[in-house]
Image (cartoon, rainbow over all chains, first blue to last red; front, top):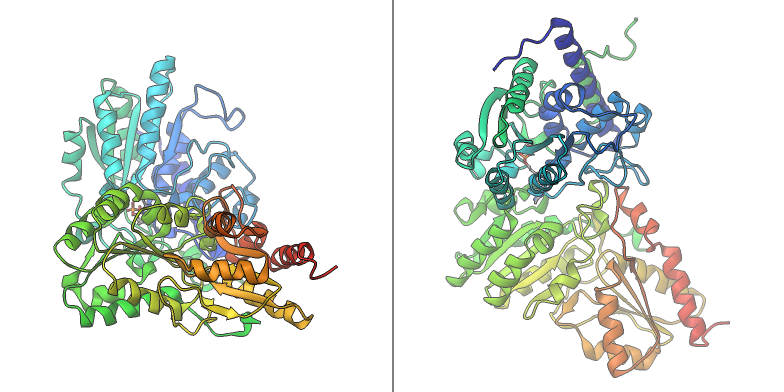
Length: 284
Length: 317
Ligand SMILES: Cc1ncc(C[n+]2csc(CCOP(=O)(O)OP(=O)(O)O)c2C)c(N)n1
């Protein structure tokens, strides 16, 4: 399942992901709010989608044949905004306006404001259903585009998630890929302590998904899973991506307290240093 | 100015009151849906882990579980953000709590635009309308921490479903906390105009009334925290004695307290009523208080509406 990815391609994806993580830190720090933990856990998955897997074109963002990405865990907006800005959908300078009055960068992704946001989300449990609807629409219209939905593991506690997953399995949507950011944590603590969702891969299988389990920070495994999903045409695919909440910033990793809290200036500086930005005042 | 007064967190007041209630009633239980740090039910959970159920991200089912616990004779508190309590879980609240007359107290935090940065998805501006439309539902919108404490006690003391809407932002203390269900305390007496207000806008109502008092105008202010049951007598007295009513709420003007005041007075004692609140639109991300200004609830707008009514009454030129 591991994809044979050329070394330079791998290096480029990794560099892009690091750049997105830096932006997540800068944006949430400047906004004084937002959700860094779940943005950092899903960064590699979104990087792989936006920079490799999705057939999308910033020059023609409304092309009917484009692939659709639904960020069902809409609070990870900073990571998706950074990815889309780096991909050329809007000016990177706009990232600094996150959560400000009048900004296109709403606290949760908003399709009325920005290109390439296919569905406004924020209320957990509704993204998968919209993705199912989009996949049905593509099938009805005879379009070859694919639909990717990214959900959180806390979100898997919500009933509507399973109703929508059931529909995706029932309709045998081979054009639907569901990606679970299995970071193990939600707002108040570990999912398994609050309301356990395991065995989660078995649940997806029982709901008729071709299910693969990967390390969600290993691009070769991520791209391998996407390739496998493309080969799976008789029904939907679920990718259970094991990730680390707060990935890339040591003091955020594995800490649920960073779910919905912005870093202070000092914390952001430390985080950026870990992400490869030299501390201020360092001679070049 | 109310801005100079000490501010307090309504959510902290709720959490602390829950603990006191839990000490006195060993059967009281509390539920939350993965937001216990924000709603402050975590304080109860730490003290009484056996009687605290953080069910995760499943608001409708939290309400049904709460109803089941209540049908066994318990007082049950269930908390999450207002958009999930009243919005996401609406039908569970309607059927399992409301129709069953289950003794469930929904204390919903983060009501209205003052949610701020999370944006329009999280800023519910229609919850008061949804909840006051439910038969048998008590609805309270406290303006400060003292009223929050009293309201939480009041709903615990009374059998049946209740919805208490709290604000995320800390608010200045503007009441004496002598909250009673079904009464609208008169925080300022006056005869030229009445301002009816709930929640965060009560402070702005008092500021405008005090400002107008300095130029010789006499404005009555009613704290309408008890939205249902509401104080019909006080409202009609205000209509009779002051001849015009301005309603302030951080909620859609279509279905909130303004609609309640307008329909009640037009049936029983028609007077000019103006509604200041959220127009028929969703909110957006922004600094919380800037959002109130942006969406038509600025002090200036409130002042203008008050002058408009005073002019119509012939109280000023
Ligand atoms: C229906 C609903 N309930 C509650 C929330 C508030 N909320 C936002 S994120 C979150 C935790 C989600 O956990 P998870 O899906 O694991 O997200 P991640 O850890 O990946 O950030 C909660 C409860 C919400 N957005 N929607």
